[in-house]
Image (tube, rainbow, N blue to C red):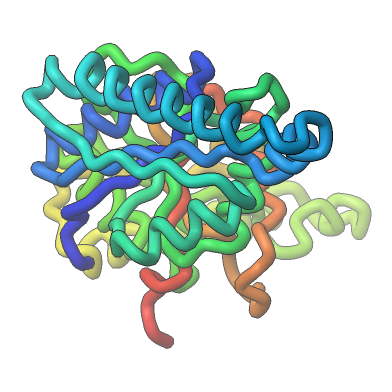
Length: 301
């Protein structure tokens, strides 16, 4: 994949957004990327301000923008200084989602970083709803930050389903967390497994069928490790039985992962503007940070 040379972190000055900014600087320092910081004043509150204040609105709006710029510059110094990094400052007024998408394209960033939730400059909920909508619309990787960062990522979980998202997700994990321990898992359930019991199939035959399915999945997973250019000692690759979402969340907790990297959706989904059900579930339920690979990164064919 193309190296990540520029990172855009969006902030609304809330505590979750500050954590996201701190993580963005941490990643930028680890991989040698340029930092860009963005704050967008929502169009709705500004329009309300103009209706209420009339001729005075322009002066108040200019004051708010100036204070926002000062806050951004102060945050950039405070958060970036420990890493020895400066950042570009981007302040705009408008529709939050559209503006972030435009900024990401104009700057040609390799990664967008947002807090999992937050509230904007005027106290209205913002990134909690904007983050998922951003994931639906952007063609760039998005990192949703939940945890307060104290160090670089230590252990990264990459669920794979052998779809076109699998290798790009592995490559993205290595690009963002090059020194982290990499854990690959594939969740499997044998086709028609539950129905075999109701059909009175012998348990010994079901066990053989289950074992054969596991061996086949493990062989596919081992082949994927090689195809991704990884050595066996660089990754722990496991096949785990169970529903995909449940397996991912259980492995996240059992193996103390601080980052999950996955595609927007798995096999068979044609519509780019949709998030897969597994991805949405992990975004909602995971306690670690979640990094979602972009559409442009998928393997051809």
